[in-house]
Length: 456
Image 1 (spheres, helix red, strand yellow):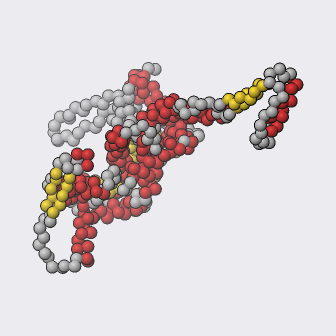
Image 2 (image 1 turned 90 degrees about the vertical axis):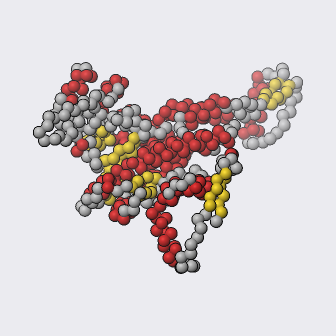
Image 3 (image 1 turned 45 degrees about the horizontal axis):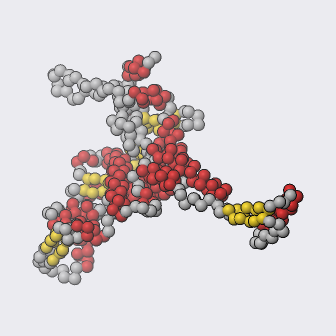
């Protein structure tokens, strides 16, 4: 049976839907035709998809196991995962509302405590697993009162999406299956609402069967060569670096040479530093060890190639030789953009779980305008952040948007201002005050940036 015949036979099985359901019809009108969904897998993936229907993606599993081994054996890989995960979750999750909704805020507070989303170690563990596995499957756990009490990160290499040729789930009630890789049996089946899976750089986003790739997937081969070169460099230093002596005894017989050698080696074995005395014409010439051990251009090349496969600049990991400050600044901005994208990706998984919590409580999450995301990565100094906020204020942006740009919740800021004003205001009587004047001078700051001045 060919590939096309297999897909056609599978599409004709009961319970497998290739075309989406028809949209709502007006009573008495003719049914509207539905558009057909084609196969999402490319020709190179179709063969592997056949085997994935019986078990998990073993190519992805082998990659994840190798990445975990790299993380255990190499401090550089461990540092990369830890550094990126820390930058992703720095500041924690923030609930921002365009219009204050106290019910949403209270539900979020209880939801975050039950699921431990207010603990940095939980967020870092999820982010680190997302980087090492390329996927973040979060299982939603409910209690008897229909409260989401936990978000459990499942091992991605044991999860199989149950999708058809169109790249859509065959049955939303059985969207994912977890396998026991030791016995090959199915452990559990999860509905689409019960397991939220976000992916890092999948081959096709519209194909739900295309899982993500680990953060250092493309750097695995270079890492092997780098480790091998490091080990060979140490062996070469051990074998060729020590200082050696050339003893030349002119006209000596074999017995004389053996006696002389045994005496010299005996002195060296006992750590004796001695001179050499010869009763015939000869010489003792020192032979310098390998003088080219500092010529490690091949190691530097492999190190550059390894970090070129990650958005993390080599200079941020301590390798700053020969790197200009301006180049490092450009690489850091590119790295921060990558972190922002991963923050949005992981934040979407938590937002979907919180959406389930609201639906379980009978609340419509679409009626309230809120955003659940990670706090903005603090890549600026406090002075730069304040300067940027003043410029946005001078441009006429609302105060709520200015606080959001600074990484604060506007509603929380407003409440704290009102509370502090009632408790700490030394002048309870209202005193009219003139609004401060903010002036921005282009080209008058550091590196040609604008300068900000405030006057009351």
